[in-house]
Length: 315
Image (cartoon, rainbow, N blue to C red; front, top):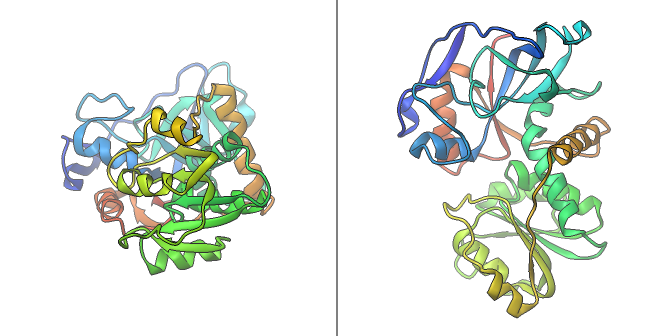
């Protein structure tokens, strides 16, 4: 089968298309013919440095989220799964390939009425956004700042916060992304690349920090007593430097999440169901063929992408 190999850590060019052995289906597992693989910002960082949540013995096939059709099952698995549309995490490797094998317990059925590519775009980002909104316990009428509001998670946070009755301020990088955030429901937008971007903004009750660094520091200053801040990304290159002590002095809560496996399944299914019902729309901004995974990584690193980036495989 065809796959993309990570041969060494470095720039996008270290992602090299090639052949790979066919995966063997064991007891309790399923074989998925992959139609789409998602790419996350964390994967680009891992490719560059080897640092991150994944374990690697090089060479390896990267990729942690895919969607496709179950083509075979192992012993002990319901044969009725064959032909089912599913999305699944791979455990951190193997996703940039034509076929993957995963535990049957790891797959999520794609609801009727939901396109497979949309389901893949929601696999990680949908559950993350749903979990974050639940964690901060939004109240109707609260002002909410969403950083990276045109990104994969941020675009979903805008929709979920608006649906919860919040007044949403989308912080984005550039006019194109501001337009996208407004189309998704943001009431206001600001360009965080501008000097003093936060000056003049009314205080907010909640900050969803997807950028980190100086942007998160400026966003923190918009919070007053009773405010909540939750960091979910580092699009700016580094996590927020706001400490628990600083937050405590201002009466701000730094919200943390520690989801259990049951929580992850529940929030994933919740996001998929919301999308199937038309209440949540993933933003797929870029698509690349599998063989162009290096180009996809380069695009994400350029900060020019919007929403989710997917690899497409021939079907």
